[in-house]
Image 1 (cartoon, helix red, strand yellow):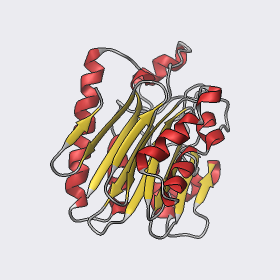
Image 2 (cartoon, rainbow, N blue to C red; image 1 turned 135 degrees about the vertical axis):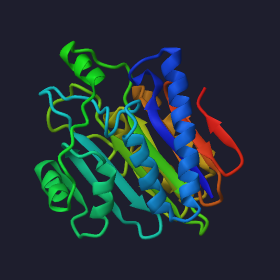
Image 3 (cartoon, rainbow, N blue to C red; image 1 turned 45 degrees about the horizontal axis):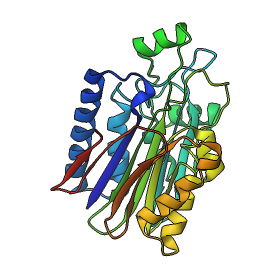
Length: 280
């Protein structure tokens, strides 16, 4: 059993040492709690659990603490994919829910599994998700001062469970001050993709990630015989012609884990029951 999570880029909000340590501690706590959860749950249940914990922590740009768009509203996106069934579900630009990944999880059980905007909000309300503001004082101050972060923030998780099944989940609060209606990579197969061979979750500039079809490329290359590291390295080379900004985490069905970023520093943590790793 293996689990790896990411929490966007360290430059996403601040670069002070206190925040760095706080993020390291939060990621280690969440990855270990999620590994414990994995003992009695499936891969798909565990990625939802892990990402919901990240959404609940204001240190990360997803759920609580999400960025504010150009019209003063918060719109979030999240997606979920099961490597065994190949089902993909997601919400795009959903508003006023605490955990977008939970809405994506419910969507796994319906035919129309990717919803956006008003449709996503209406679906959430119809399924018992209460109105909840994810705005924090820090995000409000940034918006009012028109301060834009240097990097982009997203959270994600990849899990290999005890039955050898893989799942991925990704959630984002956006890049901040974007045009209303912008769609990020997080609810697409460029930012969140898995099959029976490999799972990958991305963070970074959504437009760059979509242009490169990053997650889908890495997974396809592993499926076709590349090593996990080799698939990452070749796919990241293809970001270089346009200086693509991306970070990714992945696990293959052999239990290999890998992470890479094109610009420092993606924040991440992994755990396999014995060995832990966290960004430095």
